[in-house]
Image 1: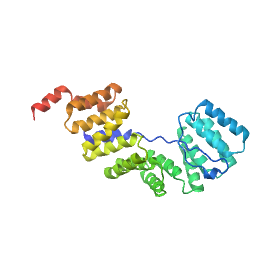
Image 2: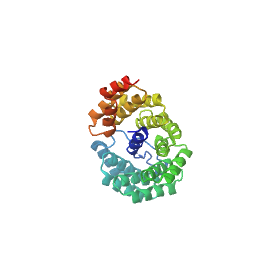
Image 3: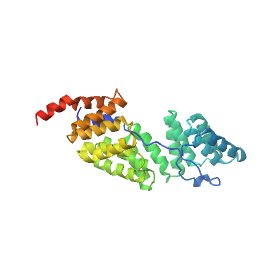
Length: 287
């Protein structure tokens, strides 16, 4: 398999940054709710029970329903989440964060048209709400409406978003269009904003690979497999970089680890064939 075919195939299943629901944290003014990442316990039954008790004491507080809807979403209880966001919006029709949260749940339910309408409404209420542009842009990107997606990511970035998804998703657009240096720049910004996230390392490594900077690519893929030993794509990409650097035995080992993790992953199996010990011996005899 050629390098370009391998990169294109990998791009088709490039990992996305997880879109976290946006939790409300203001009980007096839903319009002042700020972004908050959802912790691992937010979708627990105990947390949901606690939020239900809060709602029972304040049944007309739209923010309470928005927060519990977020928790339901984290727990995978999507219909319950939708119902809570519906209630939050009924209580406060201008609750743009609740529209954006409901849009994300609608997407997970496969209701793309309703999700788009909710993102549009959130932006109509607050044209400076970066989260809605990022969510809508990702919808456009996944439906191959690249121009619309790029416009939304650009707008979120122009608003000085602190959300790394804007840069990461824009990088994916650049990468798919062969604009690898622009992609590398955006992946790097996403990494600087959220160093714990592995997806931008893998994405940047792919663009380094496509531009022939195999050492830089290897560094990124090394980071991926160091943090996630079960990433078969990470091991495969590490193998590709090692192969390009002439480290065929190490490449074979990396491809073998990928194949052990996913025996049906064709790029890993093809890499093993190219760098197998018998082929390595032939390669050495011709140099």
